[in-house]
Structure formats: C-alpha cells, structure tokens
Image 1: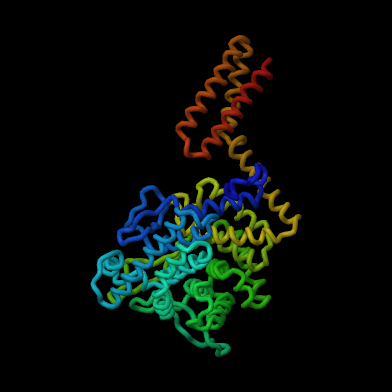
Image 2: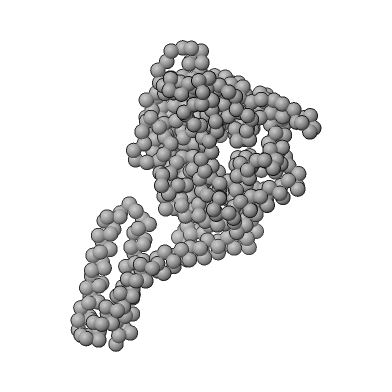
Length: 478
C-alpha cells in the first residue's frame, strides 16, 4: 500500500491531502503518454492526447517528463525506471545527432530533418541545452536509490562536459554600466543574428550551474556574475512583472537573497497587482522570441509557454517567505481543482494539456507543500477553511443553484402539484415513475459517462435534487 492509499477518509479532503494527490497525479502524468521514438528511446510530445504523434516528440516535453517522474513516490517502480532511462536515451541520441551535424557528419534523424527544414537543430537553442542538463540533474538525484540510474548516468557522463561547454557558449559577459561589475547572461540562441541576453534562459542557466549534476566540480563560469545580472534584471522597470516572476519562481529562495529589502517589497507589490488583474493575467501565455537565420527570419518561431497566474502567485509566496495570502489561495484552489478534474494541469480550455503545464504546476505545488508544513496551525486552519468554503460554494452554484437545475425542480414541483390536486392516486404513481425513471436515467448516464467523473457527480446531484423537489412538491400539494 502506498502512502497515498493510506490516507484516511478525512485527510483526503484536507489541503495537505489534496496537495499530495494533485502532485501524485502530475508526477505520474508521463506514464499515461509518450511512446517509442523513431531515433531510439522513449519520448513525449507537445500535447497530451490520445493521438500524440512521434513527429511531435521533442526535447522540451521529454525533459519535463523525466523531471516529473524523478519526483514520483516510487522511483524504484520498473515502469518509472524504464520511462526515465528510455527518456534519457532519447535526449542523448538527439544531442549526439546535433554534435555530428555540427561536425558535418552525415546522419539521418529528427535533428537532420530539422536542419534541412529550418536551418538549425534543437540544440542551437539555449533552452534545449538547459533542459537536457536539468533532466540529467533530476536523474542524478536518484543515484542512491537504484543502480539502474547509476548505469544510466555512466552512459551519459562522457558527454556531460561537452554539453555544458557548448551551453556556456550561449552566454555573453559584459560590465554593469553603473558599477563596472562583471555580468554574465544567456542568449536565446546562437543562430544567424544573435539575440540579446534574456532573463529566462539565464534563469534556467543558473539552475543548471547550481544543480547536483556539477556538485564537487569547478564551475565553468562564475555564478556570482550571473546572479548580479539577474538581480539587476529584477530591479529593472523595463521588464514585465510576469517575466520577473518566472525568474523568481525558477530560482526559488535564491532570488530573494540577491536583492535589497526595498526591491523585494516593490516586486511583491507588482506581483500582487498583476495577479489581481483577471483581464490581462491568464493561465497561459505563449512567449515568442525572434530567431533570424542567415537566410532571413526563420519560419520556425521558438517559444516557451508561461503560466502567468502560477508564476505570479508562486513568486509572491517565495518572496514573502511562504505567506499564504488570499491571492495565493485562490490560485492554489483553481490549480488543484483543475488537476482533480483532468488528472493533470490543463492551462487552456481549447487545447489538450501539456507536460510543460504539468511540470510548471508541480514546481508550484512542491513549494506550497513545503511552505504549508512550516505554517502556524491557525494559518493552516484558515487555509483549509478557505478550501472548504470554496468547495461548498462550487457545489451550491454548480449543482444546486444552477439555473437549469432550478428550472427542472420548479417543473417537477408544478407537475406534482397539479397531479395531487386532480388525482391523489395518480400522484403516487407519478412519484414512482419519477423515482424508477430517475434511477434508469442515472444508470444510462453512468454507462455513457463512465470515464467522465465530473459529469457523473453532476448527474448524481441533479437526480437527487430533482427527486427531492418532486417529493416536496407532493407534500405541499396535500
């Protein structure tokens, strides 16, 4: 029996229990998707749907899958081990293809096709390097758990230094105009016209540099120069709050230690202000950056998805030392409800969920869980009451006070009232038909919607409330 299975009935509905279940759903999401990649290993695609095609399999999603699985409750599980190892095999095969192509060796595969189509490979983009290294760092955390992970890392280790060395070539060093201090930041790519340094790839870079993958070895670049760049960026008024929040949430507690108290307070105010703007701040934003090849603007538009509400709530919690504000609780409730409905996080109502969304929401919930355990008991009680009240409001407005349900209840009441007035015996028969017909209808709904638990719950509430309305109507008609 797993730790989740042993949760008592009541603890399953506490904030702590719901957090643990939501995290478990996110971390096991990759097991339900993905498949064998044409170039070897196992890979995952952009969208999580039943028709995921191998042509969509890529570095981003496979890295996110590995990072999620590495945090699962049972990394010794053969299915989890196999998925992680095969995922690493796919990532390594893609990097080796890129390496061979950069040495003008003729190879066939996904990277060769991409080079023909858009003029560059995946690993000419900084984030692909960073996420490959992050996936390896996640496996590195499992070294002492199972020998399989040691063998996996041993296969990759000869290439790690080459990957890191190439990753450093995306960075640029320059001096701070005000203080003259050395700063280092990462560009988005090194294709054609070079892009300007940016806080997003730089935030991924510092995570990689400080990861356990390189513990005990000399840093290829001085981390302090990167930290100075990010601190300056977080102070800048020209950078959007959601981008600053993304950096803070990636760096976690590190970011606050690099800034002055006034800067932290200003950032917190900016984050709270943005978070309360429901018009401009959504659940998903596609962040594009320009890529210009030697032949002109590439039709391949590199991008990364941001989750503005999660970024802002997460960053505000980190900078306030784990304070559970009303804004945070509202976002947290919405995220957990989203996961409970979809068994993963779905940031868009019109498109299937993504592994990036699952990975991003998992980072958020992990820090929430850590902060929750350190809260005073009164604060924990208030957070649980917030969830309970919101849950009751949702049940009331969605299942009981829903206009269609109220209309049906009124119809049942009127029907029973009329029947009772004109024929009491027929009234009893009508109630029987309502009861047996309702049971039959409910059974049909169960068969049709067996995999849609949300609809089943709704059907139960609709059936019960309409039956009650029929009964009350009959009593009032007497």
